[in-house]
Image (cartoon, rainbow, N blue to C red; front, side, top):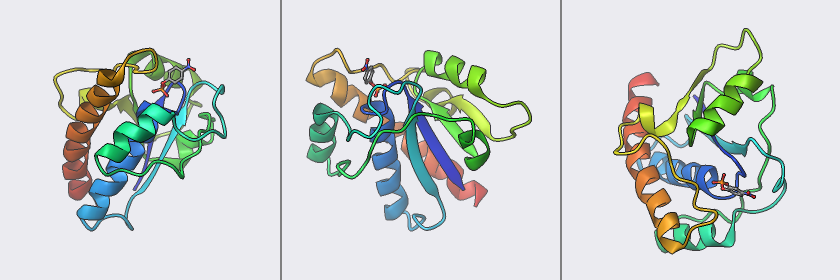
Length: 154
Ligand code: 4NP
């Protein structure tokens, strides 16, 4: 199974989701069965590591995001991934517009599908430390639901 997380810049929310899911899959013994990646709808940060605030907040909870590099979503991703999960409604709309006709992979809002208090992961880029903590809280909880779903699918 192949999963792609998508946000705007691919330096805050989706790299966090990639790192958290990878670690939860490792703990569940499923790491070799699921391919996880992330991308941004925008190209400003392509080739860069995640934002230093994202890395620091993740590291404090035991996730190492330092090897990740930002990439932009491209048309081929829609056939390369089975499940594409957007962090907010704006990302979802951009993905729907980009999606080539005839691609069958699932596309959805991450938190809408994996039951959370909010529908969107709020963009932390212009917020303080609490924004990055909220991103981690929401993503850790949704990834737990996602792992349950993955177990039922593979
Ligand atoms: P992300 O956060 O979409 O969670 O990676 C952002 C990163 C960069 C920008 C906006 C949001 N930016 O405007 O550069």
